[in-house]
Amino acid sequence: MSEQVRYSDEELEEFRQIILNKLAAASALYDELVASLRADEGNGTADTASTFKALEEGANTLEREATARLAERQLQFINHLKAALTRIDNKTYGICRASGKLIPKERLRAVPHATLCVEEKNNPRH
Image (cartoon, rainbow, N blue to C red; front, side, top):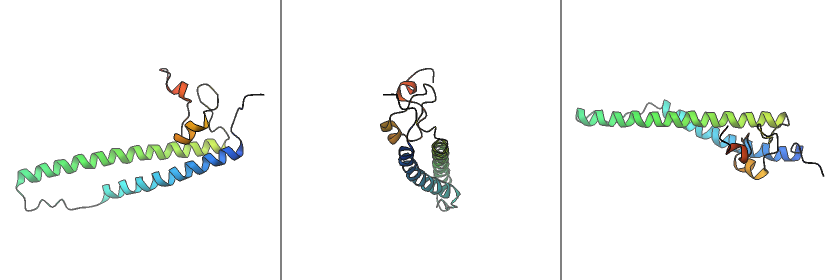
């Protein structure tokens, strides 16, 4: 029996649905993060002492920076998911880019945008 070189169209469709579900959830979270960054919320420090106001503004700045980093990571995740959809369209999805072997279905279900099998992912060259 020959080794499978790519996933069947039916299997690719299963992965497409997994990715589309994750993409919808990731996009919704990204939109929430961006909306929170754009929101012009008053900080409620107009009647507090200047020292407390400065501390609260500093905390708000740190929170906004953390939210911006989360949004950036979420956008990167969205882009990885979109790239996985392109690989499905090209019928190259699930093929390890280092070894050329099929990435196990279990790994792809857990990390649907994976481009490396576990062996190659753990290889210090990558």
